[in-house]
Amino acid sequence: MLKEALKGTISTDHKGSTDIICSRTPSQLRQLKQAYYSIFQIQLMQDIEKEAHGDHKKLLLAFVNTTRYEGPEIQTKMIEDDCKAINTAGETKSAAEKVLRKAMRGLGTDDSTLIWIVATRTELDMHHIKVEYKKKYGKTLNDAIHSETSGHYRTFLLSLIGPNY
Image (tube, rainbow, N blue to C red; front, side, top):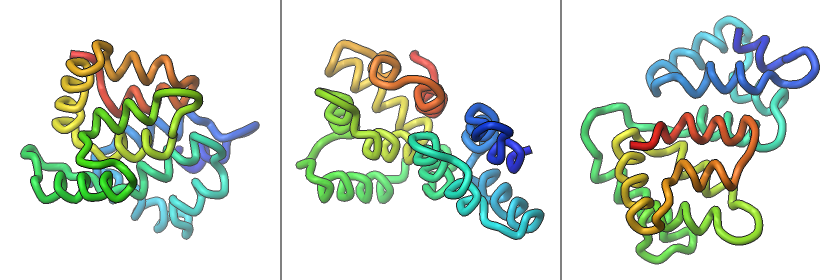
């Protein structure tokens, strides 16, 4: 079904491929990639590169290529690594909600940063980010993403960050 969604009849079936890939836990995604290769003799990532386009392609590749923690507790080492990565990307001791705000302010959206932060956070991390975002900016992260994005890209991001609380 994923191969069909990526092939699409007219263009890539955004909803189908997004639903299949983005609704999986990290362990399910690893199994999906292994099964995909054993059935089609091509890496899922290669098919996404070939068949998907634009923001949808960026999102699928980010989701497939990102290592996400699956456990119940927060991993301080992972948080420290994320903070270092954010700092080396030009932010000085900034929290994720500030980086998200900056990615969505002004003309245009910094899609790479937005995708990177959203795709690499656990549910628990995202919950804390959304709470802090609302406190600092008086607007939910869901509302900010909704107003700055559109189409399947918006649907994908909103499904990753989950509902408002």
